[in-house]
Amino acid sequence: KRAFRGETGPRGGADVERAWHWTLRRLHEVSHMETKARNQALLCQEVESELRELCLECRKKFPIIKEYTEKAILKIRQHRDLVDQDGRSEEDLPEFPLDEVLRAILMACETFQQKIVLLSLSCLQRLIHR
Image (cartoon, rainbow, N blue to C red; front, top):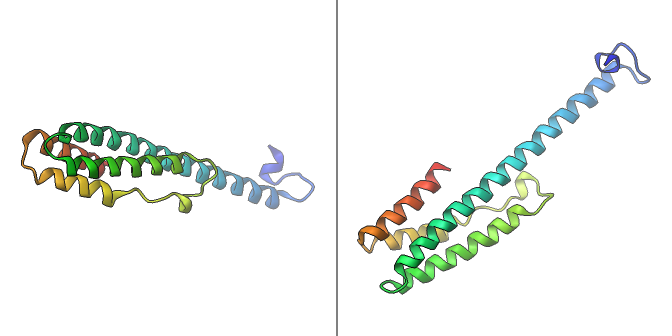
């Protein structure tokens, strides 16, 4: 304890204190990156689940929407795999594949089928909430 307060130590208290503060900042940064990665992974799981439901609902009547939804699910899985990799800095985290997801959601909303539109809006609400 004394070395951290600058009372004793081979290089003086200021160097030890700077090293201590640097270590704390670095731990905070790593914790923040891990939290952001966890949040992105959770978002991917939730949106993927909602898109799977949408895909099942559209499979017979709207095959084109099913196709776009499946593409969005694949992009989300790729994104989640990249986010789950260790050792990435915050800048290295890839962007969420929002374009593909929104394209599938908007196409589904244009069907004017109540159940499909509700599933789409639920997915959109989850994206906005996160």
